Image (tube, rainbow, N blue to C red; front, side, top):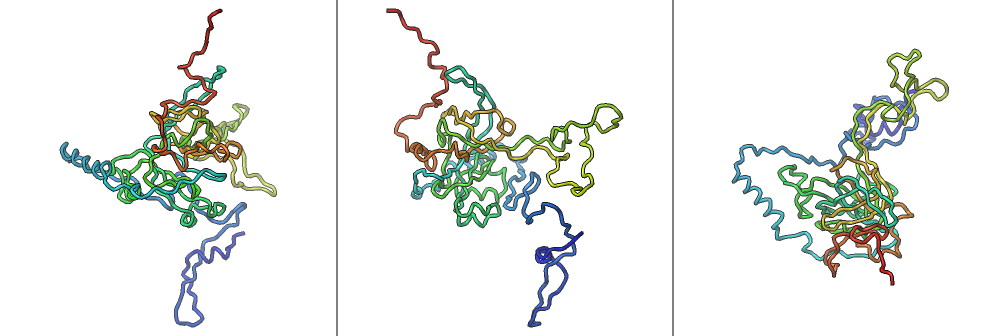
Length: 380
C-alpha cells in the first residue's frame, strides 16, 4: 500500500499555503503529491555515487582548446609563459616555515600516492621461489591541499564514524598544460603552486601526519617490506548478462529450450517472500568500480625511476591507468609503533638523507642477480 512519510512531506515542495498564527506573513509548506511506495530494505535517502553520476563536489575539468590558428612562434611564446608562471616561480607555497613533524604513533594514518600501473613480471627469492609482482610508478606526485578535521566534518563525503579523527589530504599526479583544463579546475592548484595535474585523489589522514601543500611525493614515502593497500578501477565491460556478470549456468542446451539458453530463468516467485529483493543478481552494468587489494608486500623499490614492485597480479585496472597506494589498514600488517623509527613522517624529505640513496632497494628474502648464486671453495 502506498503511503507518505512525515519526512517526505517536510522536504518536498508543494503549492499548499500555510497561514501563520499572526496572519502577517505567509509561508509555503513543502510537501509533495508524489507517491512513496513502501519498499523492503529502504534506508534513509543518501547521495549514491555511480560511475555516471557527478559528485556534489564536482568541478568541470576539461576545456576546449582553440589553437588551430596559432603559428609556431606564438605557440613557443605561450609555452614560455607557462614555464615562467610555474617552473621559474619566485614565490613558493613552501617559503613559510615547514609544518611540525610528529613521530609515528599507534593510530597514525599517513597520506598515500598515485601510481601508474605498468605491468607484471616475476622476481625470485633466495630459495628459488618465483614471485609475481606488479610494477607501479609514482609519477610526478605533489600534495595539493589539506583539509583539517574541523572543516572536513562538514563535507558531503564525511562519514559519522570518522568523527574528528581524520583530515583530508588531496594529492595530484602528472603535471599538464593548463590550457587543457577549465579555469575553476586550475584554481584548485593555486595554493600548492604547482601546474594542474591530470589526476587528483583524496586520502584520509590523521592531523599528526598532515603534509604541507606543494610538497613532492616519491617512492621513498614507503619502505621495502611494508604492506600497502592498492585501489584501482576495474575494467568497464558495459552492460552484460548474468552468465558473464555473475557466472550463472544458464538454461539447458536442448530438451525444448528455445531462445533462452543464456537467460537467468524465473525470478520473483510467489509466496510470502515474492518480488525482486534488493541485491538480486541480474543483468546490468559490469565493471568500472573501485576494487581494493589489501595487505600486499613491497618486495623491491627503484629510486631512480620511482617504481614499486608490489606482490600480486590481481591489481584492478588496465595497464597505464592510475591506482591509489597507501599504508594498509589490516591490523596484523600495519606498521607497529615499536618498528616505526625509520618510517618517513609525514613523508620523505631529501634533506633528511646524509648519504646517497641506492638506486635499487631489495627485500632481505629477494635474490639479487648481481650476487653469486654458487660459491666454490678451493681444496686445502
